[in-house]
Image (cartoon, rainbow, N blue to C red; front, side, top):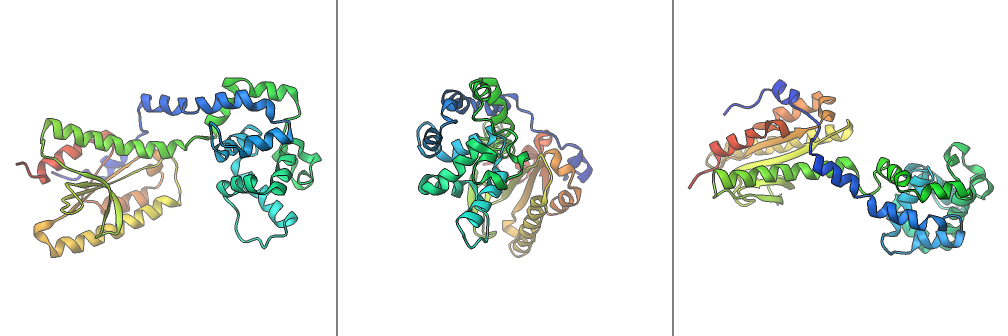
Length: 314
């Protein structure tokens, strides 16, 4: 079969359309939303908020911290800046790198002084020790002392919107990336049922030749014929250039292998989709050149054609 032209591949890029997936993603925030609705009355008390952010019950402390800072409009990134100030100015640390939210949550649980400084800031804003050095803009939604704000947090729709907008449970792009692999797997399973019941494949196995876990190895890591790597990007970023660098390197290794093992040729099939790739056409073109074949959600039929040509029927 012929490889899709670059223009055909690029022009077939699209959003991942699966309404069931999207609805399930939106519903995944429901348990945490209801939990916030029931517990928000605790947010105005230093003692109760301290317990909320340290106890593991229906949710982990880090899940609750992420939700809480979103509800008061601080955001995880701004929380990191505030904690950096606390560490540098109040704890006198030799400051080198910022802490991630996981480290911040663990310190809230383990260090009482650290926890009380932060919670005082969350509740009292500019009237707290930390708040004196924080821009008012950061604290514009610090309203835990206002009964009307607590009433708002009792509303399901209000809290659900904030948590969904901030993608508290998981990043939509991460979930889509995992779902894309399920789309490919479903296509392979369908081919096995309808066309060739001898088809075998392995998922996420380390392939020694490339020293990397490969998304799909057909039929196996020990005797590969086809390798499939997948990538879905909603937005653009430098990570796409790194991805292209990696795939170009892999393809070079495969070409050298194929030149020396002509009877055991391995082909590389790359799945790229999402309008983020349209915005990084130079990187997309590099991936195209580092592929024997390419496809995406709108050109899934390519996978059938490749299997027909390269996978042996018994």
